[in-house]
Image 1 (tube, rainbow, N blue to C red):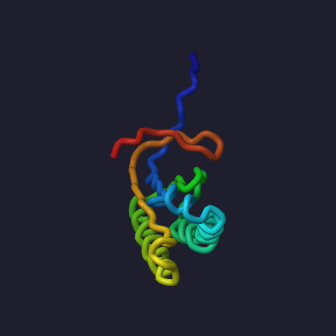
Image 2 (tube, one colour):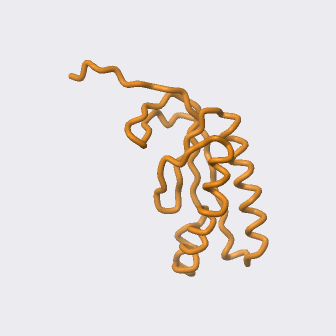
Image 3 (tube, one colour):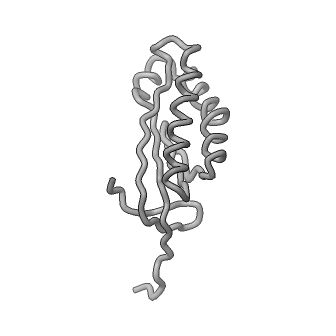
Length: 121
């Protein structure tokens, strides 16, 4: 048994994924992947940093983000949804990237750059 207690901290964890990702990839795999990478670089990463958050990891069409403040997490989510909607106006409806975002506030355990905790909401 480990004598060491896990170091916990309170954090707001946000997770986002693309609605209809399989449909988008089936329709245009190369175009969807290119657009997703562009949105990550131009919108997601700067918005998360701008709201004092960090990207824990990308998982296919999803992203796990950590914020020290629930307010920052919610503001980042709203900002991201707004900027994604603006960027989508230039695309046909079947190519638009829509995000589903959830936020949970609770204790996490950090290990390296990863985080662990409960997923209750």
